[in-house]
Image (cartoon, rainbow, N blue to C red):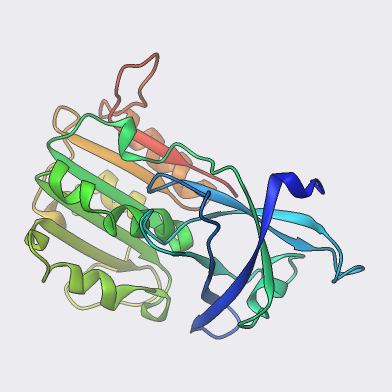
Length: 258
């Protein structure tokens, strides 16, 4: 894609490092015409390394962390050391350019579900991004009895945005949020050392949340690495969870842009 009518040039305003050389977030200016739903993603562009001052030729998908009403766009990323895109994106500094496709993409949005019941947000790694946009938007707090956010990581250092998420419980209506940070390589206080899919299979996730994964009342979103998505989708499918179709709301939504 090189047609400049399809994208805008935005400016990096801040960069935050969560884990050096591994996890970072950046904020950029936002074109006034760019509108999206919480949970959607953008195609983000950079010029090729052979022509750093040229038009963007490399494009990757990143969920918006920011809510639709914010003036800036925020993205959360892992650095893939051998990758062509993320290491260069991690080196951007305030004032540098980042290109944004004018069209938002994705269907990991609340529009997939009928309101009511419990909303389960299951993420591994940077799959957390889309859920932050959803939680920063007022609509979700008014639509569900409980919101259970599960973030699976390797170590506690990778629990990006943890302080912001925990602070959400102090907002009006925030007591309906259950936050379950779970690591696979170290034991966090009050949490098992396990994979999300293991906890779905043995009922541990329900015990931690104090809620049941009942297909009649719960809605589940999945976002993360392909292996987790495939396994979780199978486990949940066996329990009656399935995506909507032909205008009929479902109780399962999945996003995989790896």
